Image 1 (tube, rainbow, N blue to C red):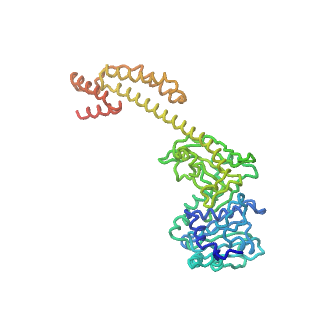
Image 2: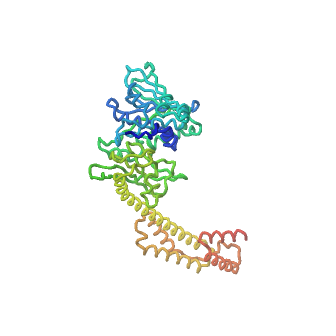
Image 3: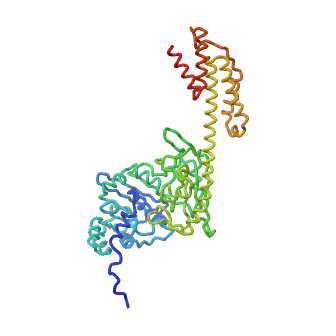
Length: 492
């Protein structure tokens, strides 16, 4: 006997809020969702060599249009695909989208989403409009979700004379002003697409061909040409020929390392990736849009720069790195928010292998940092020894005091030379500088010149030199002592 206590309504209208507003914390994510749908359509099309997406921003009208040259949908296919919620026909682990909710992303930030499409030139064009305010009102009135959708969605056909033979277009209109600052900001859109979406790597990136050669024909990531507001060139990923830091500092890439992670059962690969090594000068600026080892599934970024922070004992080192990990095992599936992956043995296997690679990167970062600190210390020591020579040669000290200072400088050089570990790894430039400094100090002659004290009596000179000797002994550096002596003499 059936249970008569089962409620009539089993799916409430709040599910709509969960799959729109609840899914996206970044308004720019709507570009990922709609471009992702294009990528899936192009990937299954047999008549397209390369997919193209054209985006038009209309800040005055608070709307955007995104049109692709994909295979499009017939009328019947459009109804099956664009009306049901969470009933996607896409293949789990194969297609980029698979939950059947991403097409409604625009309703999280706007009043309406309109889909316009056809599959071939002898068809009429199908237009389907989702009315966000009407849908929300129906849900607020506790209308069943299926009925609310039917009452809030408009379906019509249009003559096809002015439309491409096959295409798919989405228009997001009535964009809320709180989200318009990002969704309609050309530079923000370009930056986001360049980081997240399946666009090509810029040709100026020195390892662009190495990245391309990582993949076999079946694994090669799909790329799309994404044109923003009729710009001459498509958007590319944000890698460049160098790494730019603040204050005009730059770093260059040194070498390329492949990441190859086997599947958990040894059958094929779980992921293919790469790291572009540099001099590891420290944290790369966030606005460069390239830092961190990032994850991509279907050549679309999952999460952000911090996705693998938990694998780094000190997550700051992930900000020193530049690299990507492309998921190729269909059993590693992005979660609903696409900020990580669904739990299971396959993602744990990936984390374990990547953790080993991460530890090697951290060692490299630490070694480079230690070497850089050693170089800074060595340069500082050489600079101080040069200052000791300059003070001794300036004539402010007595001949005996100058000789003592020179002797101390030579002792410091001898200590450096005896420490072979300190000298190991330094360039010829540093070693020549050290040798030249030793030669100058070794040939130093304290002649007792009174030039700095011209016009003074011998007794006064002796008094000043005693005072200056005391300054030299208590000052934090020879340069500071010399500057103090010059200041004293300037007041005489």
